[in-house]
Every structure is written in C-alpha cells, then in structure tokens.
Length: 509
Image 1: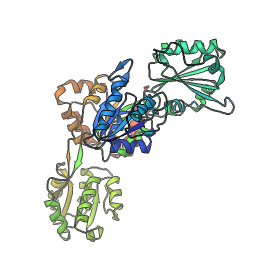
Image 2 (image 1 turned 90 degrees about the horizontal axis):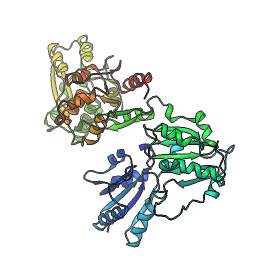
Image 3 (image 1 turned 90 degrees about the vertical axis):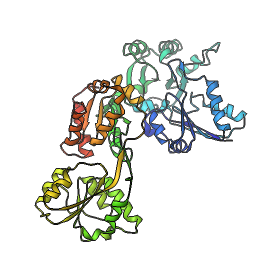
C-alpha cells in the first residue's frame, strides 16, 4: 500500500506553496493536480513522476469527483506515493474532506498538508485586511456555489448577513447578484463596500470595488469571470490605501524565461518580486562534456599556463569540480593570471578564493580581447575552459596576438526535452508580454523547439516583446526572424531586469 498526501497548493503565487507541500510533490510517484494549482509547482516533481490533470473549469470536468477518488485509491493500491495537489487549502471548500473520508474508509494511509487559502491570501494581495480593529471583530467564510442538488440553502442568510463584520465568499461570481440580494434582504445595508477579486495573487489579478447595490452590474461590465473571491464589509474601504500588489512595476506582465533551469532562479526571483508572472521555459540544459579527457589533461599540467580565462559561471563550476575530483584546489593556480568575463563569473571565482586579475568593463569576448592586447600575449599559453560549442572570437584573436590557446570543453549545453504545448497556447492567444533570451543558444533552441509550427512562431512573436541580454544574443534573435525590443546597457542580469522594468514603465497592461 502506498500513501496519499492531500496537499494545499495555495492560491496561485508559487511563493505561497508551503515547504512541506513542496517536499511532498518532490518525492511523489504520482502528482494529481487541479485547475487552480499553479503549473509551476509541477517543476518540483521528480524525474519520471506521473503527472495527471483532473481539473474542473467553468462546468467542464476532466473527471467526476467519484472518478478522481477512484484514481487516487488506485494509484495508492499500486504501492505508489501520491500527491493530490489542490488549489488553496484542501479542507476549505476544496472537497478534500470527501477525498480523505474515502481514503479512511478503505484503510489507505494519508496525510493532509494545509495550504494558504485564497479566502485569506487573495484579499491580502488586493490590499484588503479581513480584520481591522476599527472596523470589525469577526470574519465568516461562505461558499458562493452551493451543491445544486440541495433542496434548500444551507446558508442562514438571516444570521450571516449581519452576524459577521467581514464576509468572504468563494466561487460566487455566477451568483453575485443573488448573494448581494440575499444580504440586503436580510439586513445588510446596500451601501456596504464589496470587492470582487479575480485570479488573485497572480499576474492576471483584477479587482472591482463597489457596493452591494451595484457590484453585480460593475462586475458584469468589467467581464469578471471565475475564479474569484468576494469580500463584503467596511474593510474593503482600506484597499485604496493598502493596495500594494497591483502597484508593482511588472504587475500584470507574463514573461517567458528561457534561461537554463540551474541558472534561472535569481532572474525569476527578481522578476517575480517586481510583479511579473514568470513562465519558466528553459531552452538549454547545462551538462558535463562528452569527455573529460581534454580538461583533465589541462588540470594535470596547470604549470604550463600563464593565463586561465573563464567566460561563464558554468566554466568556473565545472573546472573546480574537476580539480576537486583530483584532490586539487585554488592553491594549484598559484602564479597563474586569471581572467573573467562579467561580474557573476568574477564572483564565482571569489567564492573559490580567487580574485580575478582581469575583468573587462564590457562583458563579452571582444572586450577581454581588447584588454589583453595591452598585456603582451606573444608566447603566453592560455587555458580556455568553456562550453563545448562557443564563439570563436576569443581563441582566434588571442592566437593573432601570438598566444598559444588551449580551448577545452568544461561543460556542454543541450536542448532539454521540453513540452512546448503550454507556451505555444500562450503565444497563439497573445497571452505573453515578453520572451527573454540570455544567450544565443537559448534563441536557437527556442526556435528549433517550435520548428514544426513553420512560420507561425515568427508571427506569434510579432505580438511579443523580445528581450536579449546582449548584442550577440540580439543578432542571433534577428537571424531567427525575431524583432528585438531591448538589450540592456550592461550585459548583466541586474541591468537586464532594470531595462525590462523601464520598457514596461510607460505601457499599460
């Protein structure tokens, strides 16, 4: 017998998944997930895990609840660890209680992992505190979508209307006018503030504010569709003062990040903190070289080199890992001059205890060539540990100066086996604001991954801003038929992020 984890995935913002929830996903053999569970969480699933979508949206059910229950039990009986991923909290109008009872009846081990419920998180992201001592002392959570098979409502409208200071309705957009009518009929004043928040905590968040008397009309006028949270009470009036999330500079922007997964976390974090919804879509994967022979020979004969030039953080990482394999460390580089292209590469060297002797002002190969012309490279032996496939500018120009260059593969970059379906649909539906590229490889692989679409990709990309970290990457993008929107002044992630913010600053989402 396996085990089932009923995991609350939170309201949508990937940062609101609990640590325990993430751990359950990462060790599960099967992940069964809902429509409201952010797809980003599937990135935590282990290699080879089975991912099964059982979402329900707008009355369209992939599976009935009974079929979902049967699927969960079937997988557990196969001896598998199952993560049942549910939006929000599984026990707050999430039918988690029903699934847990079925498991308990059949003696299947299970645990419940609470999640951050949208009832609390969504109002907070809209700048609405559910309690405030100047306005209320009670809160009630109410379903806005009762079981239609019930003969009569289970909601005591006469009590709930005036019995709690703040009322929070989940899944109630379709019944918004009816909810407002029932509340006013049972004593709640028509001028009571109301907020309807759609897709809260993610880039598509929309908020409409009105009163019980007019909220139905306002929500229809703005085209508010499920999923949404309805907040009724005087605390809604605090939104104008406390609205923090929707004021972030990249709020409402959906940005595709093609950088390798191992390196994307900092960039993703920066963009997300600024309000963007990031779609992680790595088009390159960093792997060891096909053979270590060339790098091993260089490491065994380090005393022959006067210079070692590192062109990326990956080069530093794999070079030092391979040195460690032979029991060597930074002391083996004594007397050798060290060069680094870019501040991140330089920082990676400092973390190994090495202060680079040369970091050019401009972070590309041409700049380090210019800097080394003044140093007299004739007869100097230079080790260049870098990607198996890379630009030839650096070794060619160094050779012209009279240097002896040993170019050795320290790592390789390959195109990952990536499902393109989700990003394809977003591009087709004009639901992407920007695609970012941080190297020529990310551009070429991105284009190759959509090669089956023919010229359609170039048409879709005409509606998308294309951001490239530097001129070399930008040229590759143009060569692939993309119109480049921006490149930063400095070829760093910090400068790249600042340029993206500046680009969107004058544009309305």
